Length: 159
Image 1 (cartoon, rainbow, N blue to C red):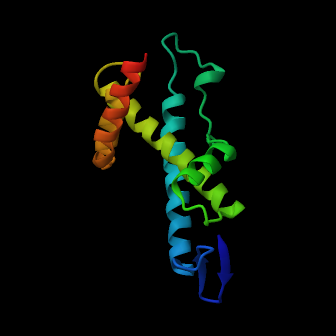
Image 2 (spheres, rainbow, N blue to C red; image 1 turned 90 degrees about the vertical axis):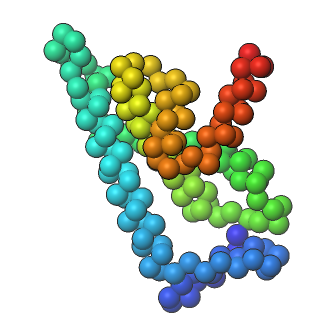
């Protein structure tokens, strides 16, 4: 995307100049703060669950707390997805690509932590598809559930 920066806001425009979106410094700061808060929350959730001792009261390297738990999908995968959904005339900067990759990684970790909670409520240690669906509902992403159920139905047919 072509970017023009002014003192109070950044302008992100499609290369064909038909769509222009203004992003203010305040909005950018809000997104950065929310991302940092979510990252810290996910790290604390993940480290508290990984830090629980196993049955024989010894801790192993696999369940020691790790405050630096991070996951980012490969940039090539993110780039491929963006090319599929964006108009051909749209360019995506490296910073935007990295930000989208980081945000999707945070979302995957957050959804997984929530699905793990749903599985534990069901007294199970294995996360199954219905746990992910329950996590989507709990995180107020109900609109994705029908699409995911359709995907799972097609996946079962193929297998």
